[in-house]
Image (tube, rainbow, N blue to C red; front, side, top):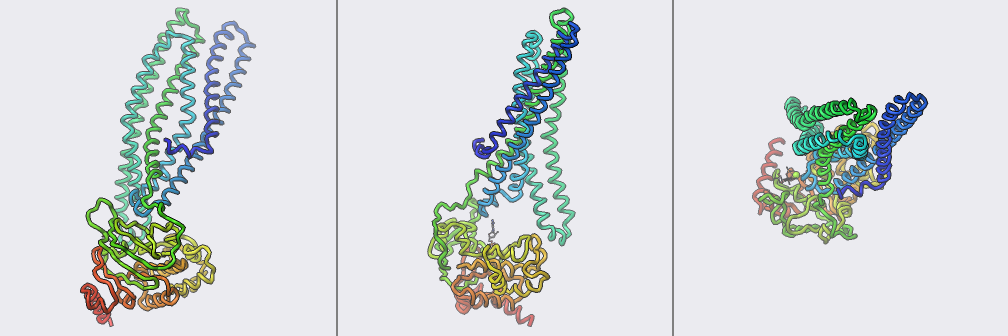
Length: 576
Ligand SMILES: Nc1ncnc2c1ncn2[C@@H]1O[C@H](COP(=O)(O)OP(=O)(O)OP(=O)(O)O)[C@@H](O)[C@H]1O
Ligand SMILES: [Mg+2]
């Protein structure tokens, strides 16, 4: 609750207005039955036509005013609720942007999407409903009760039975339904996961002809969501007849007893009419309260999930950051150990001790899963080392702000994406201020210039979301060009030329050597030929460095390297 308080700023006045209007609406509505009763008991009893007309007019004015207040209350409440919701959403989104890779994995993307949309909508909806009802219902309840008591103390005793019964019923429903609502949101998460995964990877799904299985997966989750929702809302709904029964019972009892009072002359018939209206109002307000309480149970479940996101401390902080910028491309790993999950037993990286001088070209080789990507991801601080320290430019990576560090260390991720927009817009992710000349320059080094210029609109060609309208190799080259525009001190290419032919691959490496002589270039590759001429080659196996040196040294000292080299040579000779 306290957590959400700041987001009400700027909307508190609207909230107040909604409350005032709701009070006004409720009070005016309550005056109506009194006027009605006067018409019957005074106007009709004495046959005073003028009095009846006057009171009728008064009722009309009251009704119109009540209507106006009602509209005002709804408008103000909508404004307050929607404003609050959008602020919470913005805060949550900003928080997600602060999350590190590890935090994102902790929540999962699908769940974050639900928490950003569905959960906020539910809280927002409840605030809108609750503002009016929470004011209206108590006002109606108390005033109606007072007025009813004033009319007949005896008849009011009926409420002594009804109200406690109703409260017990509501309490039971809330206790039972509450947990279902938490589960309901979790089922929504699960459904979102399937949708998100499937829609994201729709091409893979289609090429493996997995539509059937995916549909089935969707059906199961959807079914699960349905049953949970049915159970939650079903219970709420089955509660409705109970309420109706209680209301019917109350009215019948009132009629029975009240009828006798009127017959015995203890009570006026107009008073009984007014009493009925008040009784209905009392019961209706109790019903409204119970509805709001049920909505609230759901919103609390949603609110808690939002709070989890807002309260989650990003696992990567910039507490120790200073104004430093990356000055050179020296890289040092000092006995680094790393694991993705604190509770897993195996290290993903073991005792990495590595010293790279600025300007070197470093090749990294190793089988799949040998932790090549993991190793380099510690340099731009996509993850933090669990033990030991990683240094760039002579400073611990934690001494830089993330922005400065990543400005200095550009990484072309293994799984890269382009965004919808033009080629030029995509390249400018590397540097907002790059001139057209610089774009062309970077594209040339990445061997992307030729195909970009061959495209119908050159640098203004539109790229589809995810880069689906360029080939794999073209996409890789665009991603390299994008990183080059950073003019980084450290450039990391994680298997970034795997879809590029060997000649182009060599041309790109040659271009990097001549244009970025002082920057450190780290190249992860599958083909030894891609890194053979590097100043330093690292061989990784199962999270540890098992060999480092130049090509000739490794041929002598590292068995794994020699074996891989020979097998790849055979391939070449076999093909040739
Ligand atoms: N986000 C992650 N969470 C948990 N474990 C991970 C994560 N990413 C990788 N791993 C694990 O860490 C190990 C090393 O993975 P990594 O991606 O670094 O290998 P790699 O050498 O880059 O492989 P490849 O050549 O296929 O790209 C693998 O066993 C993998 O299961
Ligand atoms: Mg990898």
